[in-house]
Length: 171
Image (cartoon, rainbow, N blue to C red; front, side, top):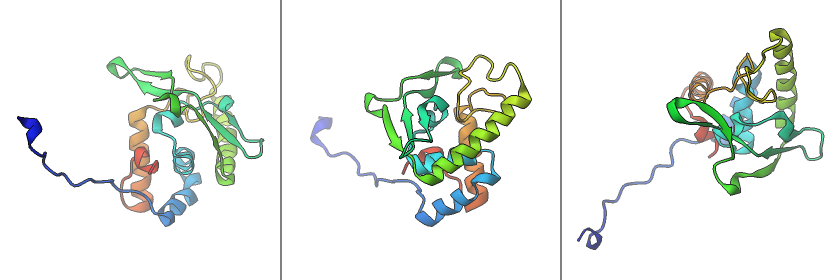
């Protein structure tokens, strides 16, 4: 009987997205924030949060023309919120993305900053995680999915006056 009646119409909400001037404002603030390089990559590539957090330096070629980023793994949350690296969400998620020059510049600076952090930390960097994570904590471990959300929301609130999630950066 339920198949004979129409469902309730619910207006579709696309959520809040960025306009080009907001994106430029965020990109201008990249150097001032711990999470700035991640926000820039999310904005400029359309990566999912887990894809960006699972990204390894070995999957990025900043010297090719054009520079590229290959999505081959993603950071995921399993039982009891344990983090692990695995295949991207779908088979179509495995892809190569051409990077605009601004992303190349941001990633080069970020790599230098991360290499300095690694040298200061010394042995034990990453605590058993792959040592090539692009967006890692200051001790080389993955930047957690929830922490990523909190940091991105805090940065967008500070810079734009409203909270945006990493997922909104895709749109």
